[in-house]
Amino acid sequence: MPRGNDVFLVSNFISLDSLVFCLFLFAAIYAMIAALAMPRFERRMQTHAVRSDLGVSVLKPLCGAEPRLFENLSTFCEQTHRRFELIFSVASVADPAIETVRHLQAAYPGCAMRLVIDAREHGRNRKVGNLLNASAHARHEIIVLADSDIAVTPRYLETVAAPLADPTVGVVTCLYHAAPVGGIWTRIGALFVNEWFAPSVRVAHGGGSRRYGFGATLALSRATRSAAFTRSRTASPTTTTSPNMRAASVCAPYSRR
Image (cartoon, rainbow, N blue to C red):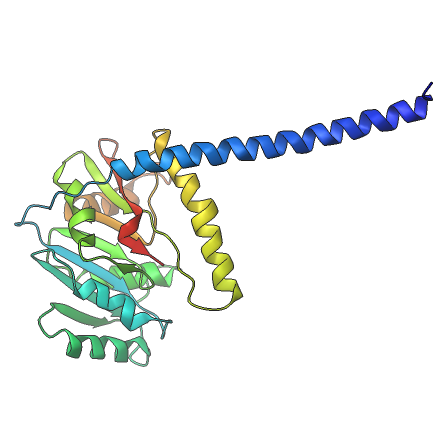
């Protein structure tokens, strides 16, 4: 016959064992939901081309000589969209990224691209300030904000710009998958993006959530941008950009870090 202390130890063991089992079960269920959400997310990808009369201005904030910078930027020069321009912006005449842009201009003479060197700051976020300086030079109706460390397929611009033909769409974002550029830390970072971040986005998207945007890609019309700036100056910090507009997401294969 077991003593009282023995019963107490067995009870604690069973409780711990049950807790671990529940944690593994929850993780397995979540993984199954993410796996089931992925095909649905893929089917929602919009592949129709944007109207030919809507040009696209791609804003690329640059800072320093990043790994594979030339290769990543080159993919934006090979887009199939009919009318687009690339605007690269740096905050210093001594920025090493300028040399990469010069090489890019020589390699793709037929691609409309410009370099903006502007040291003006707009608040504490220098990347945002860099984008604001570049946006003043945008000529087209659709504006795409794209990070410097992503590589894209030739139909990237057509895909991210297409949903903006719907007037109820305010912002288009794009999920991406990560590719390590060497070293253990980049591999860990890629693992985090591909195995945790991306599945969580698919689950949220499958549940109907659309109120998010990824800094790697944000596409919006000039009208939406103007409305956002107007509201940011006159409304409280909790006010949404446009209550009558929604965000649209397009599929992951179009950009990768």
